[in-house]
Amino acid sequence: MNILIDITDSILFILMLLSVLYLLVFAIASLRKRKFVYPSTEKRLQFLILFPAYKEDRVIVESVESFLNQDYPKSDFDIVVISDQLKEETNQQLIQLPVTVIEANYQNSTKAKALNLAINSIKGTLLHIAHKHTQ
Image (cartoon, rainbow, N blue to C red; front, side, top):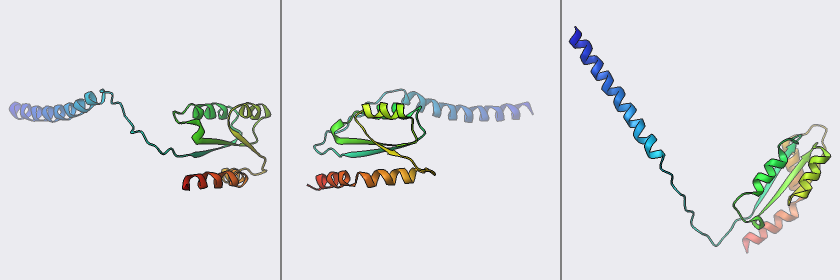
């Protein structure tokens, strides 16, 4: 009876050992840092980033500043902040940044309303960007 228990114990130990070793191999392999080298390109896409901000006074300035620190040419993206019931101090901080601030004051605010307001107020800019890409 002890031999049967020892054999079963050994088999289970080997099975557990194989699964742990399998995970160990991939854990060790993941420690090697790979540098991603992106190919250079002649064509740079232009982006319009919309930040709908409803009472987001605590985080919106940091979020916009974080986005401005992206490793992408600043001439190839525009940022629009839809200020929906933000404090005046927050709006003043946003105006100091290189972004467009659109103020929205709705009774029943939604992100859809804020985004529609922004899109309707910058349609000329969007058409200019779309025309620029087709040339």
